[in-house]
Image 1: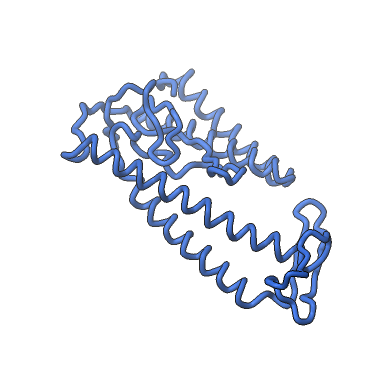
Image 2: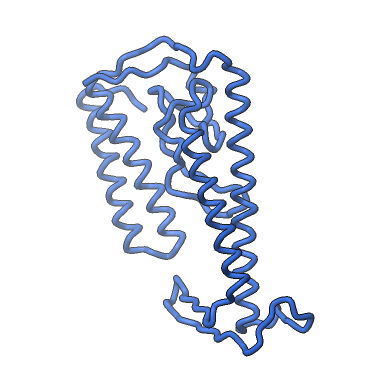
Length: 231
């Protein structure tokens, strides 16, 4: 089986979704993490990975926009429910120590009461305020991402009014395809391992590091012993 991909200047390619400059030597954007604007954390792999770069196609944008729209509607509904029906008990479990905290809603609780104090630590009021702000932050983030993606999609169509250009094709050999897959899998598991390590999940991270190393060894073997092109 042979894979046909466009020939493009891989030094000037960007991801459709996050707009980061990512090399695409084999025509497709390599695996890379995606840091949400304002979110402060990075996913193991951006959904723009393994798609054509923004300079060639916009096929990854419409599905991504639908996902964000669905998430935004869900966030708004969750906040609406949270405000209308404050939970009787709020529970938090530490991801580091597995310690559990529970806060029971006070009688006649009213977040709109002038005497409502959300700055008192280890209280229902404080935890309620934190979760309310988290919902609101998710809505702001989703709204910002949605505007960003819609803008990229609109600008792409302005630049390519006739649709996806018809670039020159090149054919990758079977051995090159295998090397590409091994390299991308190694990169994916490395990103996943780093993400787990940051969360303190050392045992799971070690397994992911092992998977990444295994695929990297496979990639090096294909390049050194079988003449595959380097990624």
